[in-house]
Length: 68
Image (cartoon, rainbow, N blue to C red):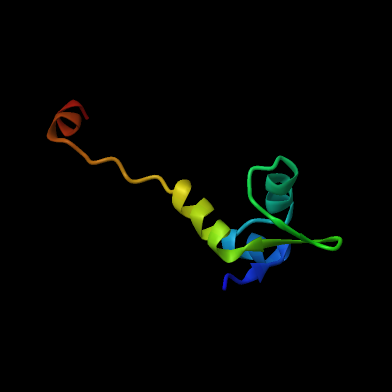
């Protein structure tokens, strides 16, 4: 079973203020669960968001070093 996180917990995991996850919710850019008037986000959704937005480093090539 996935743990349901509060907006504050999501912000802490992402290293942001609570405004950022609230904006994601408002713009419907993240899946969330309404429990009465409370909003919760599944832990797996936060992990998927992090994974989807992770940028791999560019591999350096010898031709780039020659220019510099």
